[in-house]
Length: 123
Image (tube, rainbow, N blue to C red):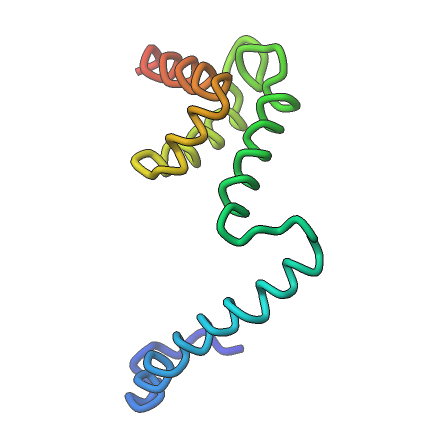
């Protein structure tokens, strides 16, 4: 693999071919092959709810195992893990999935408020 080549070295016809043919092909692969593999690995897989439910399960796991009974993952003070998870969730603000997470997991909302208030007091 040679990384010294730039995008300008790729012939224009190849670029157009990849844009016009490559994107639809990858979409079809995702819709057919990937869904079938997910369905085989998890009989309860539902393509419409898989992302939302999977994310909710991971957030609940974070709250149960990561934060547990402490105010933060780091105990009484936020740790790097608290800040990283908060950053990921902060990037989701404005999306409906974010609102669903806050509604379905009230402890997450409380934890986010604690992290945000601690961060604003540190400024």
